Amino acid sequence: MDFSFTDEQMLLADSLTECLKRNFTQEDFNKAYENEEFPMDAWKALADNGFLAIGAPEEFGGTPADLVTQTLVAYLINKYGGPLAGFYTLGMTTLRDLHEFGSDEHKKLIVEQYLKGGTPFALGMSEPNAGSDVAGLQTSYVHDGDNVIINGSKHYNTIANQVDYILLLAKDAAVENVYQAVTMFILPADTPGVEITTLPKLGGKNPLHICEIFLKDVVLPKSMILGAEHAGFKQSMKNFEIERIASVAGSLAVAENAFEDAAAYANQRVQYGRPIGENQLIQEKIFEMKMNVELMRSYLFRVAWMKDQDMDVRVDHALLKYFMVQTCQKVVDDAVQVLGGLGLVGNHRVMKYYCECRSSRIGAGSDQVMIFSTAPQILKQFK
View 1 (cartoon, rainbow, N blue to C red):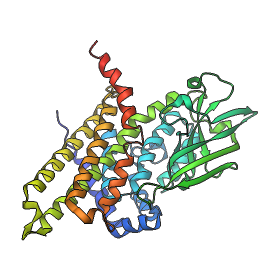
View 2: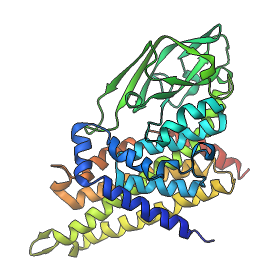
View 3: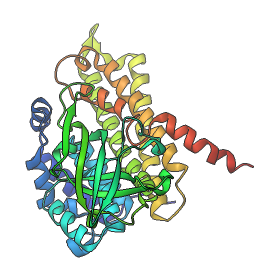
View 4: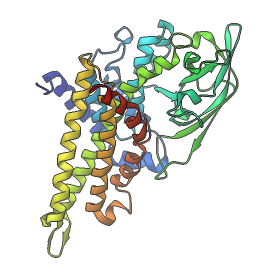
C-alpha cells in the first residue's frame, strides 16, 4: 500500500512551507502570544497565495482537494504557522458543512470573504450542561414569522470574539425530543443580543481566545438556518470525523517540533564535560520521541486516506484522536524534561506546546468520550 505523497502534493508542501517561513517568523510567533493578537497579516498572505482555497467550493474560486491533501496543509500550517492553524482547522471543518448543507446565498456570503483572508466560523456548540452530551443542550429558539428568537448561552468557544460568523446549535422549544429539535444556524457575531466574553486560558496569553457566548432575545432570519431545520444533530455528527482529523494534524506538528527542539538541545547542552545527548537516559527519550512522531504521522495520513476512500472511519477517527493527543502530550513532556529549565522558564515554544497539547485532550471530544463512544462499536465487531 503506497502512502507516499504525489509530486503535486510535495510541490504544494514546499510552496506552503516557504510562504509560512517568509510571512511568519519566530519573532512573529512570540509577538502573537505576547500581544494575544491573531496574526492577520500572515493569514492574509496564505489567502493571497491561494492556500485557503484548497478544498473550498470550486464555484467560488476554491481548489478541489482530497482530505489527505487538506490534512497535509493543516499539518504544515501547524508546524510553521502556529496560531494560524486555529483558523485553518476551523475553516477546514466548517467549510465542509457550508458546502454540504448551505444554500448558494450562504456560500457566497461566507466563502468569498474567507478565501480573501476573512475569518472562518466559530463553533457555538458546547454549553455549561451540554458539551459531549448533546441531550443536555439548553439554548433554544421559538418561531416568530420569518424569524426565530434565540435565547441561551455557549461556552468554551474558540475564537468566537475574533470571527464574523458563529455556527450555532439551538433546539426548537416546541419539539420535545432534543435529537429531533436541534437546528444549525449561521449567526453573525455582531447580531444585537449577542454578548461575547473571553475566558482565561491555561498557560496565560494566547492569540486564540476561548469565549462564552450569551444570547438574549436574538432575532435571526430563518434564511440563516444551515441545512434542514431539526437536522442539526445529524449534521453536527458529520463534523466530528473531519474536525478530529484536522485537529490532530496539529498534534503531529507540535510533537515533531518539540522533538526537534529537544534533539537539537541535547547536542548543544554540555554538562559534566560532554553533550547531554551522549547520556543513555537522554538517548532513550530521543529514541522514543522519534518513534512516536513517526507512528503519529503514519496513523494520521492513513485515516485521512481511508476517509478519502469512503471507508468507515467511525472507530478509527476516535482511536486516532485518542492516540494522537495522548502521544503528543508524552512527546512534549519528554521534550520539557530534556530542555530542563529552558522548558519551564522564559519564552520557549515548548512551554506553549505543553499547555496546548493538554487542552487538545479535551477539545473535539475528550479522551473519555472517545473511549465510551467507541469501545461498544469495537466489541460489536466480535459478536
